Image (cartoon, rainbow, N blue to C red):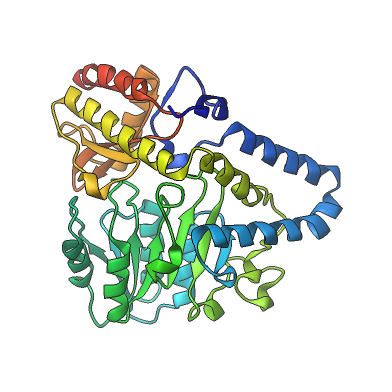
Length: 381
């Protein structure tokens, strides 16, 4: 555990081992208190808040956000989550009859559904790029190019794959696909806060990433960045005040809602930055590797992610037959929580069940020791 992290995340249940930061994040107490203060301010005078105070605060927060992710101010807007960002991007692309969209076999379930709905509406196809659990830039690029054809309109590229934690070479994949005329949409749900990030260097047509995961901002809080070519066609899913102004202004107001999560990005960044970015990233990556190896040793297996293609999440194979479906994964997560008081993620991938563990500033070795001691017996039942 990093110094001071216990106090910052004191709201976490101390009787539970929290080894799944990657799914939903966890908000530090000062950030939560900042949001509470904003909500009290809104309720003290809703008319003044929504008409006059909130618009100025949102614009200031958006400018900070654009600077933080490394894009120009007119390139970025807040969205609720990365899934929303992908939906907006595919809407902007405007698929035509027979168009195809590529996703990977690591794709987040909601994003897969988004792509399938978009292509089915135009009698098109969603193609799957099979990405092996290896660190091989050429192989990953070839996986996308092998399912690219004259009908390929867009591709959704995972930066850090949600079910597996595999880190993909997004810069190289984006460059190869754009050279083929394919619109590139980077789903970077797990990237902000987990690694160094300059979105403009990636060169994608669209980029979207969550702040409520590794940056520990309140939920929901995410960004959508759009390059020059696509901004005139990028509209929010909800048409509301400011629509005529175009991107990014058209995204600022999506009806009367609680926008305070967006206003908490800056304090969330301050909290994590206080550890030193390199210190935080090294702690998270090394602890995830340590915890993953400890649990893998207890199960008599090896973690499957190469050390050069993973970050603060690790992936451990489970015995055959434990998880083959999403429903079984859900049941397994509940069993581990109920029996061991450990929160984990688990997913099926290519017919094999995997345990996905996360590490953040508030975790220490004992969190994974608890899981390593209890999991073999639980699996034997």
